[in-house]
Structure formats: C-alpha cells, structure tokens
Amino acid sequence: IRLNEPAVQTREAELLSPEIISVAELSFTDRTNKRVALLINNMHFYNPALTRHGADKDEQAVVNLLHTLGYEVDRHRNLPAQKMDEALKRFSRRPTLPLTDSVFVVVMSHGGMGTICGTGNHRIEIDRIYERLNSRNCPALKDKPKIVIIQASRGGESPLARCWRLL
Image (tube, rainbow, N blue to C red):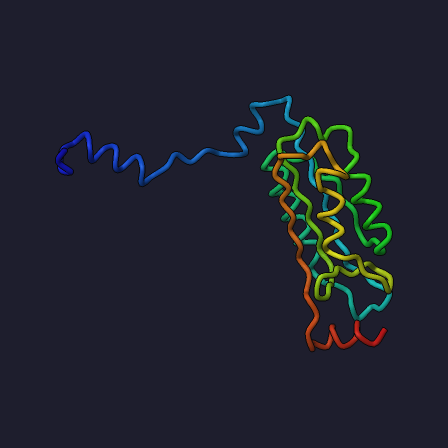
C-alpha cells in the first residue's frame, strides 16, 4: 500500500477529522428523551458582604445553554445547606430520570476545600452531590453520564474568605 494513493489519503483524512454530531439536534429529534438538569445558585447570604454580584447573569447563561442542549432545568436560588441537600434528594427521585440519557447538576455559590456554602452559616460537602447521584441512591441514573459543574471559590485569603472564616 502506498500512502500517496487517493484511497489511502481519503481514509487517513476520515480518521483525522471525526464527524461532529450536534447534541442539541439529537435531543430535539428524540422526544422520548426527557433530559433534566438541577441548578442551585446562591447569591445572597446571611452577611451582605458575601453577595455574589452578577451571579444572576451567570445563572441565565447556564440555563440558556442547558435549554439549547435540550434539558429541562429545575432551578433553585438562595438555599441554606440543608435545603441544598433536600433539592439534591428530590432531584435524584424525579420520576422522569429513567427517560433521560444524562443529567447536569450545576451549583454556584461560595465554597471551601471540599464544601459549598449554603446561604446560612452551614456548608454541604461536595461529596454529598456525588452520593445523592450514585447508583445505590439513584438507580435511574446507573450507567448514564452525570455532569456536575461547581462554580465556587475554595477559600483562600481574599477579603471574602476572611469574612467567611470569622463565623
């Protein structure tokens, strides 16, 4: 086989440039697929200095993206840690989960190492998100992609982090 033969060059080009499939187009053609996403956005906290200005714009951008990808978005705002966990539990029990091919979970808040801040003075462990969506607690999502996006600082010595540490 000679590499300069047209058939070999064509096959090589096919291997180097894989077909790009539009996820949005696929989701709209299959009406049996009920894609769902959970979005939690904490903007206002017990301490006004912790307000996440502009977070509403980030939230709308994420919602627009998820809608474009064919996801119904279950939106929550300004939840204390316990209510965040309850929202995760309710989401993991949604009756439409067996009909979805994947889920998104997006959490936007302040955070620390391994934790996400609720609007009160408590935090939720990031591992709790994965625990709520695992095969044991959410069998409807077994073998399905679970995309988790966390937009949260992890602490540090910014004025915001010092303020949070004073609790």
